[in-house]
Length: 304
Image (cartoon, rainbow, N blue to C red):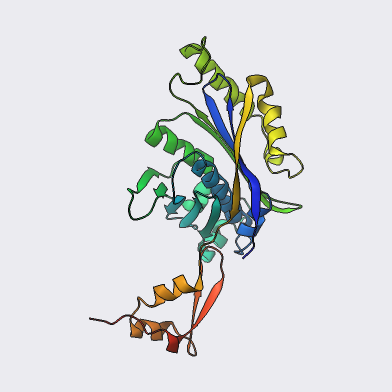
């Protein structure tokens, strides 16, 4: 697995004396390393890349130990979309596609939307801090054409938080790239200017969103345009203040020992069924790496 780290993968920022904070996520070469592990249709790969960038941006806003994940389950040609990010910035994800249904969907050459790919179902955001801590999960029905629209529905209905989200993913000359810009309206009076009444706060938020809306996908995915310079282009006149940046890394957590433990939970008959010419092969859904086990070395669980 690649030992790949993007030192400033998530740039956090806020606007001084205004009720606006945000995060700019740019995966750089990490996007290509994660997305090319699977040979998917470009529309599926782009959706997976957007999910990775979004998950990294949302995780960076939380104080937790463990993993934060986005999961979409639907009845469309892509019934499963999953991305997760640890508190240390280790990122992984995949999209599971039904090849026949996907081929029928793209037969006319049109680029399908996220809604076309996922179908009807739900979007789940989960913060898992291990067995000793409560697990938080927010669920919302899949609504809207894009992953951006679906995320907006979640924030409006579940979090009741004003947000602006821009997701981008595409294959460039340098390979696949993915990015996200997330703005949040800060509640309360903390950090606001003394003259910032309710009307002024609303105007500051509208201005920030209008400026963010001028950002293009090409700018977001341009390796030659540093993130801090991009943010200054947008918000320099609005009191931009850069906060601590966060590193992102290639984060598949599969291992031979872990998969051997999974196999040990199956009964002997199930293990015999899995084996082909005496060998059991298990493939990680995230990194698509196959692990081979000698059937004779796996005892299996005692059936009672």
